[in-house]
Image 1 (cartoon, rainbow, N blue to C red):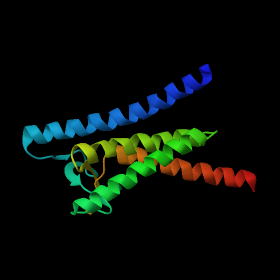
Image 2 (tube, rainbow, N blue to C red):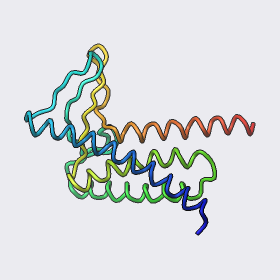
Image 3 (cartoon, rainbow, N blue to C red):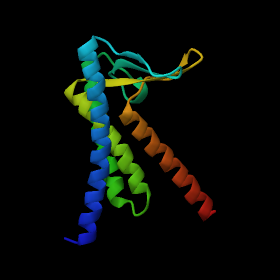
Image 4 (cartoon, rainbow, N blue to C red):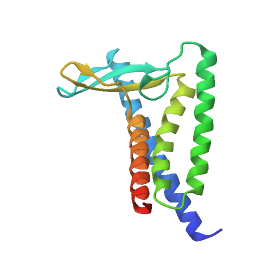
Length: 162
């Protein structure tokens, strides 16, 4: 095997592992608070609260289902999308591979929870003057960040081509 390929693979694996572990550690911390106190309701400041919500949907609680068939179907779809992202990482020859890695790391964090807990623990609550955003977790942050970076990269590349 080529040294460059091995180095690139190690870097890619390291990025995914860092994101996955960051997400896992944050969730385990919140779950330890739940175990100790019986609930999670911590005010960080006037904009950010930590409150535990069990999410059976996808990112930000969208498409939540009570039926196990729909939940299992959604989980299978997420696995297929993750495999597609792996394919895109392999095929990418530029910086977009890193953005796909960020998305994959976050997605694997949430996929782990879907399989292990059958739900995803979300706990970051952002509010402003009584208006609350969706409750989310660290994996959702990485997924969103990766998608935003991909969009900007595509817009910048489009502008260069034009």
